[in-house]
Every structure is written in C-alpha cells, then in structure tokens.
Image (tube, rainbow, N blue to C red):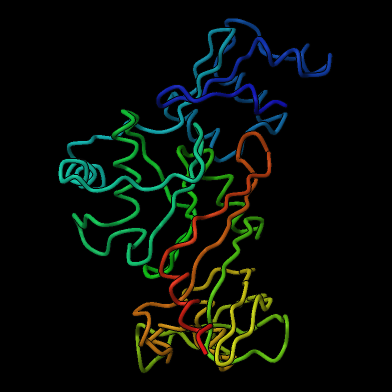
Length: 321
C-alpha cells in the first residue's frame, strides 16, 4: 500500500520514494520525477496520481513545503508550535506542573490518536487560558512526549458525556478525517439509560434539531432545524427505565438527548431536558466505541472506551426492586 510508505518525522511527513517504485506498476514507476526535478514537477506527478488532496498539496507547495532529495520526499505536515505563545500549550505546561493526571489514550500512532474524555470535562475551552479541557490534556500528553505539534479534535462530545474523542496529529490526517465526518463514515456508538420503558425494541428518530428560542442552552425538534438522525436498539428493560444503544448518523448539538426527550424518554440525570437527578447530576450517556478509517493506511480502526464507574452505579440503582 502506498500510504504505508509514509512516516512522520517531527513536523514532516516522509515518503520513501525509493520503495514507492516497488509498489507502482511499470508505467507509473517510469514516469516518476527523477533526481534534480523541481518541486513543481513532483507536485504535478503526485496530483496526477491522486496520492494527496489537491488543497493540501497546493498549500504546502505554496510555502515551500515539498522537499525531495531523490530518495525521500519530505512534505510539511504542520507549522512548528510556539509553546511560549500558544494558549493551549501554555495551559498544557501548567497542567503538567500542577500534577494533573494524564488522560487515557485509547489509540495512538504518528498520525492520529483517540483519547478518553471523562464526564464533566469540555473538549475545548470557552475562555482564554481555561485549564481543564481535553484539548489541553492532549497537548500536555504531546508535551510530555516531547512532540509538541498542533493536534486537532475531529469531533466533540457534550461536556457531561464521557467517551472517545478522535484527534488528528497533522493537517493531512485532519483533512481526511474531516472528510470522513462529512461523509458519515465515522461510526460513533453510545449507550444510555433513559426514563420509562421503550415500546419498540429498535427504531430510528429522524427529526430536525434547532435552537430553543426560549432557552439558549436547549435544543428542540423543529421543522426549521438541521437534519438529525439517531438509530437506537434496546439493550435491557427495567421497571421504570430502559438501557439503550444508540448510533448517530448526524452530529447535532445534544442530538441524543433531544431525540430521546422527543420520544418521551429523557436521559436519567439530564436536568436540562427533564431527566431526574436523584442518582446522577449529568446525563447518563456514554460513548461506547468509535470506528474510523485510518487517514493514511486506510485500515479500519475500532476503539472501545472504558465504562465509567458512574454508569455501573446507576445500573445498580435502577435494577433494585
């Protein structure tokens, strides 16, 4: 596979050009740029064979990011981070100095990572210098590894929802993973505990979601909203509650919470949408797994998240007679 010939070295992606000829057919190998070729010729050849996204390749070419020595092709993956001036990395340094616990990495390689987000931790800050965010924790992880590059989250979870979050380690990975998100190729599976007993064993909620004009923090099902589709399957039924597995086809704000409330079954602990809070002060919603196509190897990556302790505690409560 072509993409298996690419490694990340610092800020660059490095293509083993010598080995590339071994995986191409004779005609393609014959037309490869030769030693001494201008970076423009290298770019044209790469574009002609659709090895990289046009936008990305043109962008790095414009800043002199294509460097070829005849055996290795260096492609600028990201600009260097100014740790002293970057808000996230400054907060990451403070995170490490203050003795915060490291976050749990569920998957990691040179191109992307999946990290576990606990309930109560926002993915990104709402104010400058905010410390307790997943972005800061991931930056602290990279700083600890002495690999301070710009990492970007590909999707988000609500502050009070736990589960896996996918990050890209360089711009090419980000472009490819963003495209997967747009094409609904990243599969996100959730489990939740809702109030009441669902009648159907499985179903699909296809109902647009928009802002609630009376309450800015809430979202509602409305004909003027954005398309939103949630699939659900019942895992277990109890006397007054149901445990469900859910899969998102779209990614609207509060989508699962809004759709289950729309069905008349708000999530346990979800005060904003009418859920009872006697056992839990946040929604009983957990991201159970994440599946995506690796941005370079094209391998299918399946990541399962650790079950949080609060979920087991809620199940003990609802199963008591």
